[in-house]
Length: 78
Image 1 (cartoon, rainbow, N blue to C red):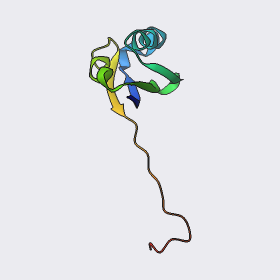
Image 2 (image 1 turned 180 degrees about the horizontal axis):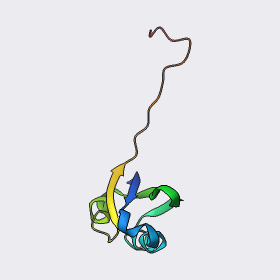
Image 3 (image 1 turned 180 degrees about the vertical axis):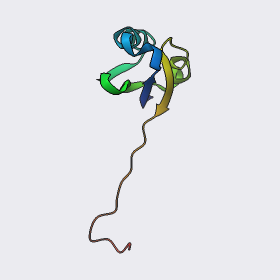
């Protein structure tokens, strides 16, 4: 099952972020967005491959994307 993830690029790999992207894609990640100025790559990958992406050269961290949903404005929550 695919899982949405956010990958942080290591500081020393910022200059070769395109290489990191290619390596992540080779590892099974479907890259959706590359935020070059801040060194973040978003996308999805099969849950079986998440841990392996953390060992890709130039990757500082792999984290699941979290979603937050606020209640509707007319709800009873205060």
